[in-house]
Length: 409
Ligand SMILES: Nc1ncnc2c1ncn2[C@@H]1O[C@H](COP(=O)(O)OP(=O)(O)OP(=O)(O)O)[C@@H](O)[C@H]1O
Ligand SMILES: [Mg+2]
Image 1 (cartoon, rainbow, N blue to C red):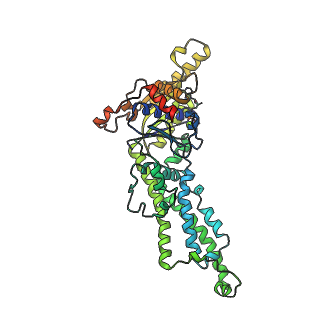
Image 2: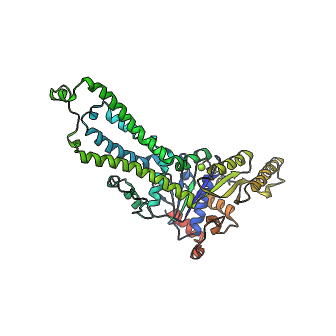
Image 3: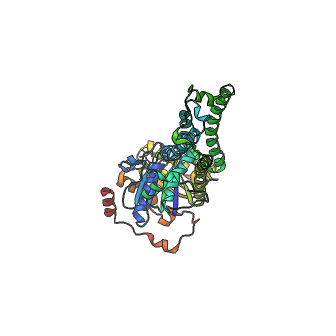
């Protein structure tokens, strides 16, 4: 992966439209690059923008443009499902613990993907995209030591085979507050994953303690011998000491793997991530991007800012109503430029129809990137040195060709 471009800002300012327009524009100009647009907003709307059904699987739009609206729970369930399976075997192999009433319910309830922080769930998804570049990616000495997950059909390795490697990732983030939940991983990542595992351990521990109280006066072995209670241990779940130890290690490895994946994503964000703030020329949105900038600085480089939905200058003088709006926007447009003078600023007009479908998104993209070199879209502040060979990557489709590829997919 060469570029990771992220769009964030206040609700409704045009993040999704600009993300999609940028993806379409880059796919048109960078024919040799594989581009993936990811919606990280739970309220996905890429399907509406592309006028195509896009869901939890990578969907091809043209031969080099793809989109996905991932369901983070689905990705996390691969892990929680496997954890629950292992924990169930381990617990059921113990004579006393296996007698805990509703043990299955306790395990299933604790090991649910809803108990995993969103940032971690997204990391698990994100990792599957990044691993596609190198199916045997080694992200640390312990990573993939745990092989159990890969035996299942919907497992990371299987999933990686289905996902092509991408050169450019474009991410449509949710409005600022929720966007921060996606960044929250780095600092308290370890703590969060510990909390998750502790929750599981403590629910089992609590049940175990109540059983222990019971067995102070009850003698389960005698009761079992007398046939008063049944030995709940499953024939398949009778494990020797060594097997139990390995199983417990497997469980710890899965938790550790989840933790490693989260911290790896954080370092990728920090390393090559480029945040573009999106605003409109109005006070609430201006205030929001100021806050968003401060809040996201520790996690990602902020390279650019979009001022969207500006009333075109040639609309001035048509009515008092439009003139008032124009003057109001002009005031905030200037304030935004002054406040963010160190960033690359792109402006786009309020179009007379919603930027949807091939033509709509292309029109918005042309409006935004009219005078911008492709290199400057990828690397607006020239933070990353561009490989001279990469300078010639521009090899745009004839627009009719690109349109055909879109229609045929
Ligand atoms: N330049 C533009 N001209 C005309 N309409 C626009 C423009 N940009 C965005 N819109 C319209 O504004 C609405 C909001 O845009 P969009 O969904 O892209 O915003 P968002 O920031 O992603 O919103 P949310 O926070 O809800 O995800 C949409 O109806 C979209 O079609
Ligand atoms: Mg959106």
